[in-house]
Length: 64
Image (cartoon, rainbow, N blue to C red; front, side):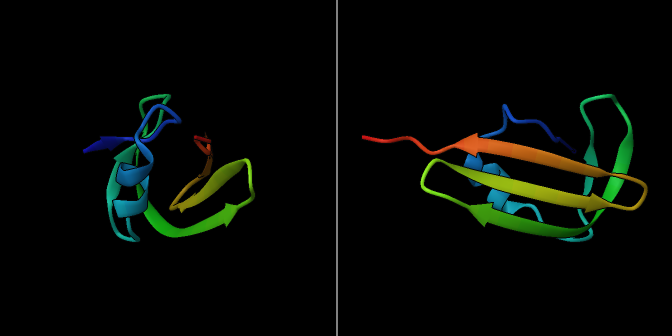
């Protein structure tokens, strides 16, 4: 089971899909209903709509 947080690698966040069971940072277990990904030049923002809650995860883009 994946613990959803901003410390997860972006590749792991991109692999999650609706129906996956996750654990939130506060220890609650929930199921993903939908995922919305927004992107800017600076970051990716993941909005996970869960059965009983929602979680926003922001990942800074790495600039080389």
